[in-house]
Length: 289
Length: 289
Image (tube, rainbow over all chains, first blue to last red):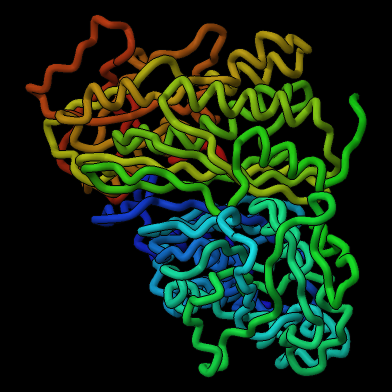
């Protein structure tokens, strides 16, 4: 490990690397749309397994927030990160900033500043600012709509097994997902409701069902799982794909390999928790932080 | 202490109380100016002494961020807060939210959402979004300008002594400062450089001197100290007043009791750290987080 530096030196590093010398970052005001704002905390005990690199840590701090911007079909503008660490090492911080910046670059966001604190447990809180012409919300789905997910589910569950097995390169790669900003933008005009899968697809489906007051019929064989995933991993969370609904006649390009249709919406029949998987009640089980 | 609740129940409380049911908060886009964004972490060990109430905790989480918006002469729009706690109690959370909201109300901001996490050490990260027609930066001061502070310095140092003495009501009151949004707006057109005093007035003066490449001559007798403060408390930090500079001919209303002139700017004579107090070098000493 590289030499430890003082908090002042670490702050100087951030100020110089990010050109963040004022009390706030200044961001040009967009010319149309609504502003959207979201924040997410990651910390060592709950979110950062042994073997995760500083680069992957930075990437993921950015990605979990940018995924929330994608979930409302927003265009990300800027990200700030508050970091708490027991001690500060420039080599770690450089790789961390590289990870945050590379993830931001993937989706057109800018890493503009943050805060640094001495803290017994490594803790990172990112906050993403975006803009959306018409934010897609969790409420808005109707009976007859179809439900889709992006990409492949259960990356995080498989990544954690790889970390445990010491397959660190594969694990870190799975842990660095690209926020689905482009995929959300492509369906922004047709999606009737949307969220990301941060706590597992079952939780997301329940959230959409509750917000829109509808029932979901989902088919397990249609759920796209990442290689080496087991079906129960869908109750694990940390997927960060999108789940969205769209009217029956919406043109969702299923051939491009990014979207999978997983079920259909109907009138609610039972209580608020009316999500059925292969005809049986799907429990609202997922990740608890 | 009231009954402990699950994280799901605590999340439901926040969602319902803040009407925050989507992946991001939606904020109307302002019609002029630049957006400004800032984030700050507070946590139990470093920032929250024994005896601080949940209400004061919430207030302060909001206030330290809104103070950064004030420091650029911005108008605060919205605040999000990520909270990490070992266990969740509705009574605590209600008082905490009251504190955040009351502080936001003082300066016209809106508390729009956040994140909740299980965490061994109580940790709160606020992020404030604001707008400023012409953000006042740390760079911009010139020789001949005068330097001012708002209000009275050393509230936090005195508050911490009150906490230690068990004078909890007085301590909590001192700990809940009002972000200087109005005072900053009143000098926005004339201030040449500005920052807040989060790490102590000596650190702030050094930051302005470095950013603007000027020297400062400050007089100790002109520094306005809060009742019961000792002079050395100015090196302690956590003041959250504003320090700003303005041209000699600017009309700063010293009679309204809010602004004090504390010194004058000149060409830099020595190294970057050219701040003199009563003619002697003033050390860049203050709060380290």
